[in-house]
Length: 550
Image (cartoon, rainbow, N blue to C red):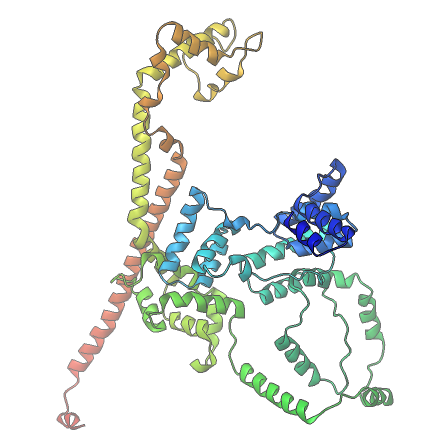
C-alpha cells in the first residue's frame, strides 16, 4: 500500500501501478497447482532435494518450456538453507567426534576427508564446517556448478551425473572428479554439466605447450571423444583404425604435408617466444620431481600430517615403531594414523626410488621414513587397541551388566508373572481342541497378537479384554509393570549379538598385542646377540697402544 501511495503521488500511470503490484503479489503468493501441474513440478522438486542449484533447475525448466507458474511454485522458498536447522541428538553425538578433532588442531580439510570416508551425512558435514568457519557458509566451499551454461541432461544422464555431484559435495577436488569421469568414459556433455567447461588457464597453457612442441601448424579446435574403449570399438572410428592399417604410411616430407604446414603455419612473436621459454623452464622444474604417488592422495596425506606438526617425520616413524610408550600421540590422533599408511604398491614405489630427498614431496618423504618399520599395520593396530581397549571393555561390561540386571528383574517380577499367566489361560481357552491349545508356555513374539485379535463386532481386542478383567478384579496396579524395569529402555537398545561381537573383537585385538610383543622381544634379542658377538670380538683383539694416539 505504501508503494501504491508513492506511485500515485508521483503521477505514475495506473497501468504501471497495476502491473507492478500484481507482479509482486504473484511472487509472494504462488498459485496453487492442479494435479497435472503437480506431477510435472514433482520432477524438478526432486532435483532440488538432490542439491541441484535452483538456477540450474530454472534453466532446465525453461529449456523444457515449463509454464512460468509451475517454475515459481517449484522455486518458491528454495533460498532457505536447510542446513541452518539444528541437528538432532543422534546427529550431535556423531558431530561431536569431529568437533573434537578440530579442537585438537586437525586441519579442516582433513576432518572433511575423514567425515566423507566415514560416510557421514552431508547435513552433519555442513554443520561442523559452518562452526569451524562461522564467517563462511559451508555451501560456499563446495564446487559450484554452472547455471545458465550447463547443458540440458536427460533423466538417465541426470542419474549418472548425480554420482559425481555427490563426490563434489564431500569436498573431493574438482580435477580429481574430472579425471574420474574421463576414466569412467562419461560423455563430455555430462562432464560439462557437472563441472563446467574445462577453461582453467593453467590447464590450457600446459595443453598448448605440449601440443606446440609436436606441431608447426595452428591448433585444430575439435572436441575429443571420451568414449570408453569398449564403446569406441563399436563406433565408426573403429573402422577408420582398420582402414589405416591397410593404407601406406604418409611421409611428413611429402608435398601435401609441406603444403599443409605452409598454409597453416603458426605465427610466432617475440612475446610468445619468451612465454614459451618460461613455460618450458617451469615444465623442466616440474618434471624433475619424482611423482611417485597420485597427486590427490599425496595432497590428502600432506593435509593429514598437519595434525602431527609437533613431530618430525623421523620422530613420528620412530614413535610408531616403538608403539608410543610415552603416550606422545593423543588417543584421538592414534585412530587417525591408519589413513597415513602407504599401500603395498606405494611402498614398493618408494623403495625403488634411489634419488635424493629434494625430488620428493611431503607424503613421499614421510613414506620414506616408514620403510625400516616391520609390521607397520600391526603396530598401528596395537597402538589403536592400547588407546581404546579399556574404554571398549568398559562399554561391553556396562552393556552386559544392564542386560543381566533387567533379565533378573523380568524373572522376579510378580506383576509380569500375573499378566503372563492370564494371557496363557485365555489363549488355552480360545485354542481349546486345537494343536495350539493346552500349552504350558508361549513365545514373547506372540504378544503383539493380543492387540491384533479382535472380537466379532471388531470393537474389542484380546488386550482390551485382559485390561478390563484386571480392572474389574480390583488389580489395576498389576498393569503398571514399568516400575519393575527401570532400565528397560536402555536395555532395549542393547543387543546381545553386538556385545558378543565387541568382545570377540577385543579378544582378537588383545591376541594381536600379545603376538606383536613376542615379535618385538625377538627383534630385540637378535640385536643383542649381534652386539654380544661384536663385544667378544673386540675383547679377543689385543689393544694396540698406538691407536690411542689417533
